[in-house]
Amino acid sequence: METLIKELLNFFSIEFTVMLTAAVPIIELRGAIPVGISLGLSPVHATIISLIGSTIPVPFILFTIRPVFNYLKKTKTFRNLIHKLTHRSMSTSRRIQKYGAWGLFLFVAIPLPGTGVWSGSLAAALLDMRFKWAFPAILLGNVVAAVLIMMLSHGVFKIFS
Image (cartoon, rainbow, N blue to C red; front, side):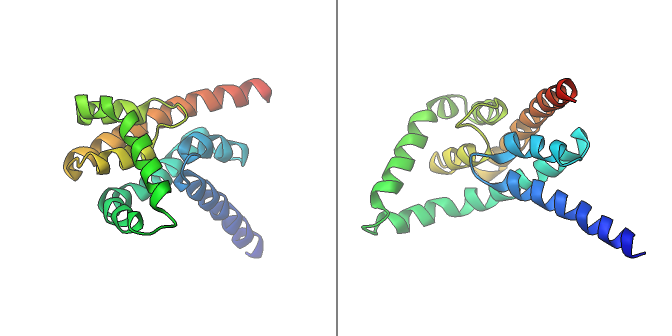
């Protein structure tokens, strides 16, 4: 019985590690899926856990980033950083603005550096996209990116094992 409990705790700690990795900006599920596979999860399991982890921050970003940025713009310490983040996000979000939810979907779905749920959510919030359009576009784009990363990761791990 003690061995079973230890194995369950180990298994859940692996899942928590993958989920937490997926929730981190920049890394997101692009890094969490390979981490999950390398820790012994099946590619599908690692992908599902990563999707959950990377989706958790989205509503918080969509609903809170503008008030937080507006507050931080008033501080001397963070004014320049917020200006840079806003400017960078708005310059990369021209296509999102042009194509709306479809542009946001494509932006999140393409697994390249600088794209993903954090930057997509930030762009959607700064563009004042409605939640009912932004969240599904981000979620579906994230699913597409997850499948692509899973296929790439699984293939790479098969080659090296």
